[in-house]
Length: 329
Image (cartoon, rainbow, N blue to C red; front, side, top):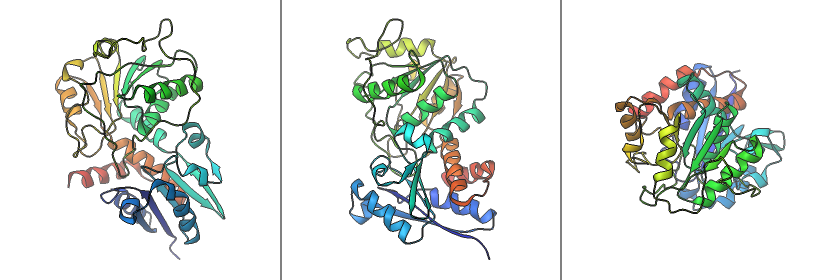
């Protein structure tokens, strides 16, 4: 008998998510019966506090697993029986599996970015990296970068407290001197929260506030006005730039920072995948930068979820090709 799986995605505004097609197409290649349903809070008139009830209902209805996206990646945690090490570390869950009566939370976002980075920019220098965005996606990419061996990550966000919270959590996790923050000038474009299966910047993981940034020898806030000069200086000497905000999405076009801050010595990675070729990546390539689009992060995090749901080994190159077809069709 052909194995069958029922999985779903819980989130808000997810009607255009590509996850059903991405998962179901890969399952077809494995000869699996695989149904991926969307549970859209917006369409149901529900808030993020309903995540626990929905997870319990899914378990009772025979779902094999769930993906979790904005705005439930943190609110769902209190309703789970167990967390993987990664989910507990990041304070966010994007995948839930069921083992009998137990619901177990996982986080595949960070490893999705890590594997995409290793594939797309395998020999990129990571002595000093600047990251724009300190939300949920930023927490995942930051964890991935430091896990991969980046010496120092400077986080910038229009919400200084969110940036400080993420930097403090990273220092507590990886050690002194590994992360700090830089103020963003208010003239930069707003960074709205995206919806759907794209990793979503909806807030940093819960942290215990540690020492404030800006210690001796570290870049960081010193109370000066955020006029952009410190960010410009950091980018001038940085190896790479990671963009982890929704700016550049089809609904939020534009650049997340002035084009004049980019230079050929930078590599530039973007988490946005609709479109795959964002204005930031086009601008960076025109200047001679090496670039990485957001498609790899989406595919590799989905592949890990697919493996958790089915036990089957996904073909990530096939999934990458399928994502490109979905995004460009």
